[in-house]
Length: 355
Image 1 (cartoon, rainbow, N blue to C red):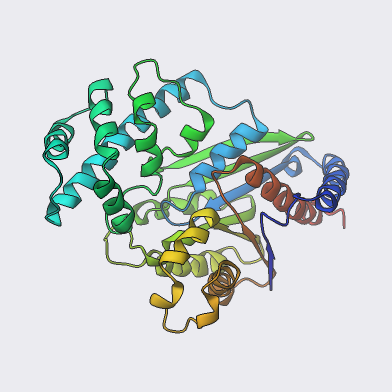
Image 2 (image 1 turned 90 degrees about the vertical axis):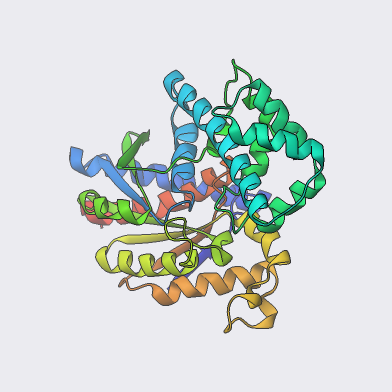
């Protein structure tokens, strides 16, 4: 049922690069055949689904960078403001949480913390205070120990490391900055791009519970569903209620999605593989799952264990295609999408009646 292709296996050594080149040639030939159909058959609609904060929007941004010309000026301005807000709110939540745990910091940190907590926006004055506070080892250790409990982005350390740059008035976000922007997706967002005259439409829909009723409006014309789950969420709870395990919610949603899209290509991205690789060293799966054997306390074993959970929930009649992914890594996203595109194009040729 499952086919697991890791980012490490796609196009890294000479042989794989050769295979990737051959595969791309085959895809181009198939796309040329697909162009022979009518206009409707020249469009391939891909639906991105998953729970909130799984990395769907980050992957959509990567496709915009890889297959389009990047981001417009108005988008850069918007991302600039989001990054400033992400940085300040993350530090404020961190300091608030530390206060609830009765953590006592040095007088210098306490004084700056009060100033930061009262700030309404991130400017250079506030950024300078955050930069000093973030140098405090006690605060840094506290954040990494409790990051799963505070409902702050896992990229918060990136915000704090770059806070002086973010605080500048003429700050211009880089692609790496934009990929780490956190803004709840609402409504339906489409990213269109063209490969060999075939138009791909990537539809990103909000993953929070309140947004899922809008998914029904996206089902028509979908050739493939890409379901994204965040591997690092195995010991985290939902932002919506702070009690439901995120992995449990994702598995339940995956089962429902595969039932609704019976007959469609279903592709699963096991995302945030980089964070997961480091996290299981500190928080082994055996501490959270009673049925988890001891020998999975390594990356490959842990990945196989999580993958098997999704395979068990898969209700579709066809194959489930599984890929490791890291939505923050442009090269990984490019390689993974090339592999996905191969499968989607083959299925679209069948849909168009070529074989």
